[in-house]
Image (cartoon, rainbow over all chains, first blue to last red; front, side, top):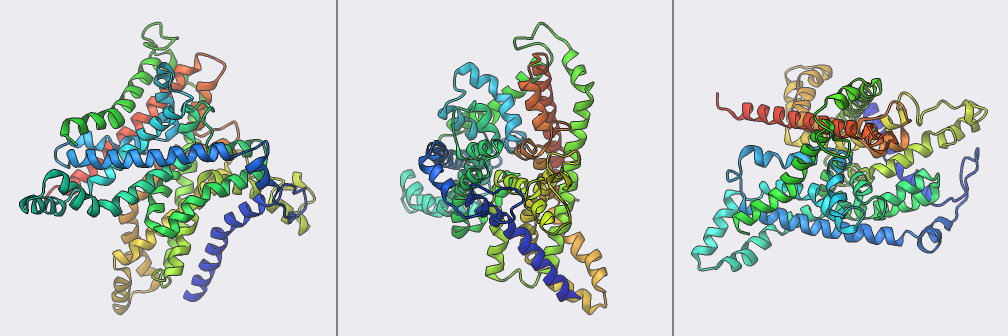
Length: 259
Length: 281
């Protein structure tokens, strides 16, 4: 009975887990799929359209890449440095807990609250504006991420280095930086993925003028263009799959944020 | 980084935008700011709270979040308990993580082309002779029950909960606890009710609540797979903002403020619970 349950679970899980990849791959490979045909015919037309045709997705891909890399780097660095200066206990309970707030709030509602200011400052509809808006979500995340990093052990390491004659710069580059590198990489990729998948905030603050891959997938879907939507969707999946190969834990936090 | 610079950065990026946005939303919704701001009024709030569509939207959002989270939890618990022996295998572990790479938009695309009247399930049912055309297939996308939205939420939450519960299993030493229970003569049902479920659910409670909250504010999925009535809260708020009737804009700000204050209350209650737990007896 127990093994029957295990087999049933394995088959059901296999089906539920594999089907989205199969369907998206099928959709990406079939520009024409007339009803009620069960299987589409293969063609790479969607891919050639994506890269060279009128539906060129390259600008959206590049915008997404520049945004995600910049947001990841700035949020990680800002979160790392400021959380060190404002370690636990130095920032009041509510002030620290406030950092959970932007993370809890749905991005599109946050965008609604911010939209007026971005329009007033003339930053709406610009790449810089979208970058700043995404930092409003990713920086608090990075700050909270590194709050747990500054433990007694790190402080002891710093003190030991200073006792041995190291100056502040050496403590940072020779002790803290190598010790923090795995955490920095994890935080960078998590914030990269938050930005890479982001739709609500980008569409509202970007006013539709900042094309990203997520926006392209949404647009193709709204236009009932499944082949292009799936092909762009596969491009959207590529970095997280690479990160899965690199480190599974990174995806876990990004998945929480995605829903 | 000097403490002052760090505090300014934290203030500018974490505190100021949200507090300024919330303040503005409250002022606009009370008629004290914005181009419709002609003086203090509760008209926009009473208009918002008097709309049947608002309460329907609230109910629909809670229904999607609650049912989706509950179904996902049941599925994830089933997968974790049934496959507990495979949890330590590296290949199985990687397999569990694989669907976490799927963003909501791609899952929405998948659900649409699986469940729509011209989707793959409809084609399959026609090939099997169960239906004679697209019109015969039950409406599962952009329907009143939000089936497609529910499917995407359930699947995405299942993917996450399965990984999370799979991580909790060895951490909570459940294999040893189950063995002890068996030695003491407990049946499989008793072990489930008295050991596995209380242990896993107690530890996973904050994450389950977090997922419920995220599902409550879901935007892209209902925008693509939902219909114009009833809408989930985020979609409803954006529709109020983009409406041609100008007086609905302060109502959209009111709804955003209400949602933000609800999250603040939730955060406060969660912090109070944590503080209470930490208090020495």
